[in-house]
Every structure is written in C-alpha cells, then in structure tokens.
Image (cartoon, rainbow, N blue to C red; front, side):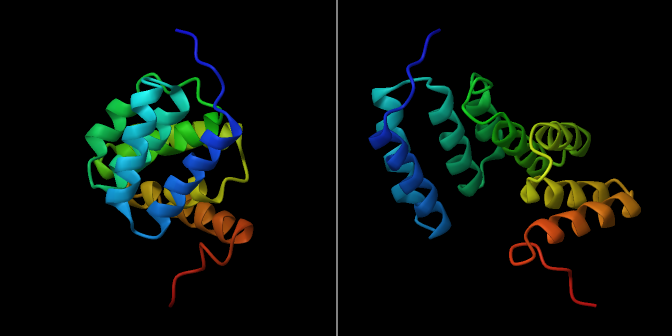
Length: 150
C-alpha cells in the first residue's frame, strides 16, 4: 500500500491527540484519532497514535493489533518503543525487551526506552542491567526519570 505523508495540519492534530493523552483526556483523544483514521484508514503514523490511545485505555492487545502495519511509520524508534510498552503490559517481557533494544538501536538516547528496559530487566531478574538502564534514563532526562527514593 502507498500512504501519503500527513500534512502539517494533520501532524498538528496528532500532536493535539498526544496532548490530550498527557492531560488524561482519553475519550477526546479516541474521538480525534478515530476521525483521522476514518479519513486515512490504515495510515502507519495514525496506527501509532491509535496504539498510544489504546494503551492509555488499558487495552495493550488492541495496541499490538493497531501496530500491525505501522512498521513504516515516520519514527521507527517510537514504533519499537510502543510495541515494547504493549508487550510489557501483557507481561511478555522477552518480547518487550527485544523491542526496547530495537528502539535503542535506532535512538540510543530515548530515555523512555531505557526506563522501560529497566523495568523489564527488573521483572526478568537482571537487576544490574535494570540499574544501568535506569541510570541512563535519569542521565538523559532526570526530571522525567529521577532516581527512586531510598
């Protein structure tokens, strides 16, 4: 399939959806992404947004389904991170680990991926690796990923 690049206006709508998610306005985000998908069904970048909304709705299975066909999205690191997040929520820690590593291969300074990998590694009993990834996440973005309190 061939997909056209989203317009500047459409990217602004995508940003608004992420802002709505940040503000906890999940229902509004769902309405917006559904409207965009209605106009551009199957668009890889909109599948990514749909997956993000699905994760916020607490539906990681749906998020994984949304990501099928999103491999060609504009941001491969975000794609792998999103899929890792969904796998993590489903306690598929080995799958989550592999995708988090893929995200970091594309974007080594993606603090969110280091943080996620830290949590995955802790679940897998690999505390040294978990601590290393937590430290990297904090070094990249100490405001979002501070050290845990002692």
